[in-house]
Image (cartoon, rainbow, N blue to C red; front, side, top):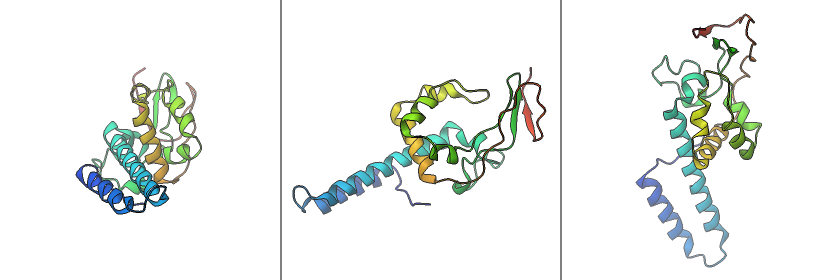
Length: 170
């Protein structure tokens, strides 16, 4: 996994130093342009990590995260889970976001994120995020890279799960 900058003053200082170091290369110097774009991407990825961590994405999409008090190593985040959520809608499973994000474009993600989803997914939280925040989440998860296996498929109401489930009152 790639090392990331810590948000805040370190990022501002690094951006300033990067600009100062390469500004002397003169007009049209591509080195400065590439460095500044790289810093902006790192900032967006850091923002995505923060949102994923504080919005509770790991609670369902990372096995054992809630039970460990958030102490699961980042390399294991967002790989989906085989613990289902059972209710009147059937049984849903938290998908493997690491695989999913590799299969969609940023534009597709923005549309999908704002559509209703089966419970208990709090789709309305995604719906209400800014475009910049949704894009940061997308960039962060893609930056983590693919890992893990697909989660079990949705089960229609009345279908018995063969995996552990959390049952919601009907």
